[in-house]
Length: 371
Image 1 (tube, rainbow, N blue to C red):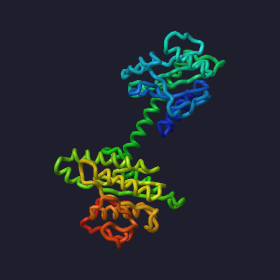
Image 2: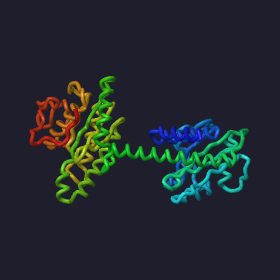
Image 3: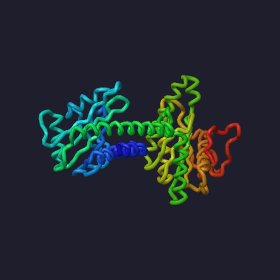
Image 4: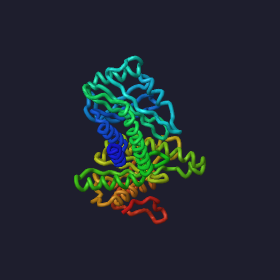
């Protein structure tokens, strides 16, 4: 009972799928007096079990969080049978024990025996993980050669531990999905305004402490209203989705950038670290690709960067206002390239955008950064 309580607490404390998998493996390994444990997930579309985490005594070549350690399900017929079943009515599958000296008849048993011997392990207990009535993966605990072999009681206990672990993994997945929805624009899949606010605040703290360059590209998709009025909002949504893909592609040109939709036809790209010239090149590429889209009339794009002579940037609001003013100037001039705050505007070689007055009240943009 103590081991089950400890596992339950560890699973409840996990804040991410990685932490959840590690907590499940560690808890089961300790509860069953194992030397090694792993949690694997069934990737249905690829027909394989992918190892998420290994803990305990790792064999040569094993990593705690492997990049690509997986096993084709076809090599394990008994696991394949289990994976394709559902247990919505209860009666979830029980764990089983395998040993390095067991019967090698059959591909499934042969694969397990070979793996145990290769890694110096004498036995293992395998417990299926079932989430929402469907097979999700497996919990695997092993002991080294020379230690007592797992018995039927251990397998029954592993079944209980797997149920606790599955409940914890399900809870973590729900939390992860809630976080994703909270910081994701549902139409484009890009980050949303909330995510930008948080990232920009952190970026400006780094700028003040370490002089890290922070750049903000704010852009409006031109012609969205015409598209909506002419072909309907579903076509307008398609334009926004396509532009979101273009923004994401151009953001990938920078080493550390966040592509986001602020709302309506307003998007932004937040870059932390790259010099402003790299950001401007990405913005130029963005303008060119946006102009080539089948729908819409390109994009109006403004750039504000701490790498430019715009004065001290003490708040996110100031950087947003400068980028917003630059974007407004680009839209008013019909510019097909980005306008940069702190540099001469396309329609007035004298006025510096850092000192430019805001647009008239009747033409103020809907979006404004927070203080």
